[in-house]
Image 1 (cartoon, rainbow, N blue to C red):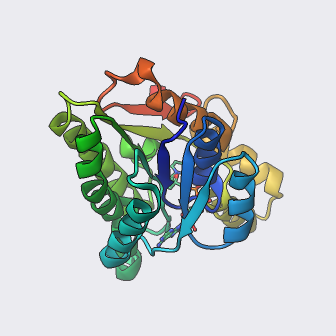
Image 2: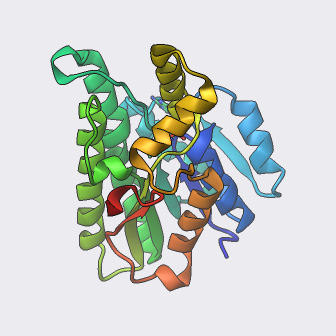
Length: 256
Ligand code: NAD
C-alpha cells in the first residue's frame, strides 16, 4: 500500500516509534528513522523488511536540527509522504517541585517538535496532493494524571494542533490525526514500573499489575505492533476522510 512512499518517524529507535516504522515498512514505505540509543539495531530491524532505511540523529528539542533532518529526508527521498511525530519523554513530579528544565524539554520534544516537523513537511505533501501526518499523543492528551503536568500539557497541546492541521488541509488529500495510547510497555513506561516497584518494595510484575489496575480496565498493555497497525489504517484509502481525530487505544482508560 505504501510502496514508493517515504515515512519519517521521529523517536523511532525504540518503543512505539520503532513499532510504527516497522508496520509502515511492511506496507512497502521507505523509512527515515530518528532518535537516540541503539540506532544500528533499529536500522537492521527495519531493513530486514526489505525497504530502504535511513537515519537522522536530530535532537527533536532543537528546531535547527529538525530543519536539517527534514532537508536530509527531502534530499534523499524526494519528500516525506507520511510524517509520524512520535518522539517523547516523561518526567514525574508535582507542579511546585517540577524542574524547570524538564518542563522546557518536555514541551520542546513532545509538542514543539511536531510543529516544526509538520510545518516543514506540509508544503511537499500539499504539492503532491497526498500526505499523512500522524501525531502520537496519549490518553494524557484527553485526561490528566497527577505529577505529569508538562506531559499532560504537551499532549493536550498536540491534540489541539492535530485538529488545526487537519482543518487547514481539509479539502486536500493531506490528513492529520492523533493516536492516544494508554499504557505501552516501552522503556518510557518501564522506568515508571521500576520507580513504583522500588517505592513500594514490590516485584516488577506486581508493579506492572498495579499500574494497569489503577487506570486501564483491560489490565493489558497496548503493544507497539497494535499501534503500528492503527498508523497503517490512517494511511489507507479507507481513512481518506478521517480528519483531526484523536483515537484512543487505551484498554478503556478514557471510557471511564
Ligand atoms: P521510548 O522511550 O521507547 O521511545 C522514545 C523515542 O524518542 C526513542 O527513540 C528516543 O531515542 C526518542 N527521543 C527521546 N528524546 C529525543 C530527542 N530529544 N530527540 C530525538 N529523539 C528523542 O518511549 P515510547 O513509550 O515508545 O514513547 C513514544 C511516544 O509515545 C512518546 O511521544 C510518548 O509520549 C508516547 N506514549 C507512550 C505511552 C506508553 O505507555 N509508553 C503511552 C502514550 C503515549
